[in-house]
Length: 114
Length: 111
Image (tube, rainbow over all chains, first blue to last red; front, side, top):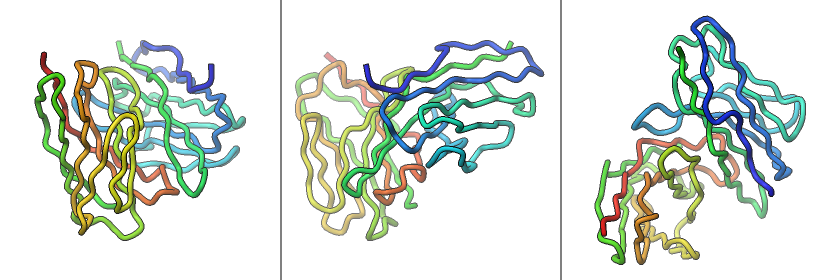
């Protein structure tokens, strides 16, 4: 099946620990994104990458890090510097066709701090 | 990118049309209107987009006013599975990274 996969669906972290969320896509999309969603709120952009080996900070990048070593993978690390990491994390990818760019989202990972 | 204003919640009877409004009074000439929806605890799903003409696809219709300051997403025959949060976004068509997902409208379809 083609699409975006995120794993795990639920992730538990102890305070002070770093944790990495996985995002993989086999859609051959160039751009990938990470968003954070808190209960009852919209999505906020953490990081995005438009091409391999390049990425830019979004609106709330502090306490997070990413890498883009492969086109199909864009892992997000939630570091101990992120003081309030409990949230729903969404990965997305996009491709430009016919002058249009549309995003497609993965199923999300829910991170809980113990 | 322009910001949008949506009502926080709406109800709709099953089988009826659901009309979801969105105000985007500061939209620029090169910005498109996009609609996504998010069913509980899932990733957002693309629905439709448009610039100035009305658009229709298998999921919905999009009506954009002539001055482009507002739009309406229409689900012609709402079903219980259409219960979700609906997001209206305005952005240039080639920069999805600039999508700003506000709080959206929670649509509840009732039997």
